[in-house]
Length: 408
Image (cartoon, rainbow, N blue to C red; front, side, top):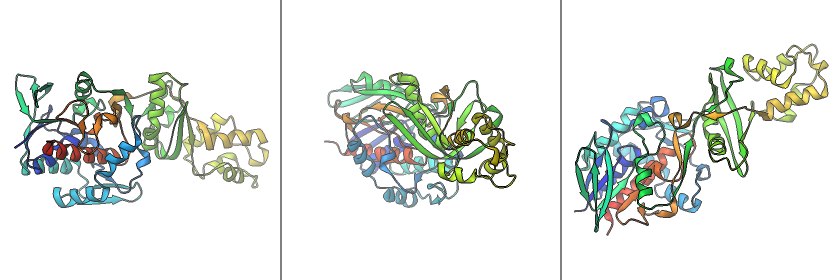
């Protein structure tokens, strides 16, 4: 019987342990925290967005081969993943149609975490909590995993599923990234992805708590990202799905400094130039405030009027052509000022990581180290908000588990 050690009891690691054990391997799952799966617990506001209800492969971001990424995503189709959770884990999923997300019917993230760990045990995996890995050493045809405190585990195959650097309070400390680099793998520079943006001084601090749906476009050099969705003003900047989904362009422009700082443009409503021009045509004694507040929250309207340098109490018939154009530009493609970001502390995932060229997409086996398999967030790929990153964890974890258990 093959012995497989899985390092990390998060989403990808627990899934890897389930499938390695199911395939007949003696499976040991090592987890540095006392309970595991902490990112699962905090995801989706404590509800856990298990999967997207629909999949657009083009929304994943990688500096590696898009073709390899597609192979990985397609290795376990969305419909089959949904069936696995409902039939194997025993967790019915419900779709939130407005957001196109799937949650457990209980809306409790703990049910997902506990259900996966329970299934891993039922399939035969042994789980060791409070076990922090210090090193992995290749010995002949096998591996030795050394842990702090002196414990060691010998195995035929090792699966690295340690996560990245995001939300360090959950136990993510970059161990897997460092181990992969030490073992000679090609690593793309890491950065905080899906993280809130900061503007200091904050020009819209007075709007903290105001939320709405917008479209954002972040552009820096050849990089660009556009996202529509929820937007939230915070006391130091901006958050919400639309912000998180374009933040990687801003973060990389700040960290890499190989292009000007990203410009983030915001379309505050679904209305375009022509629609706003129509709404700003003279209508009796109607004011600018009256026309714009029909589409936006009052507090935001006042701030945007100030940005456009147009008096809110101006009657529409008194607007000059330049004032009308400034206002339309502000509403349709205005600048969203930012200075930095909230980094890994608030990032949903880690960008960068192990080059996809260095793994076999069928088995997640390293092309540099025989018997080493890699899955989850340490890989150079991430998706948008909405269950994509769990889908990635489930798919790559399954492939790694099966590959490690069956490797010859």
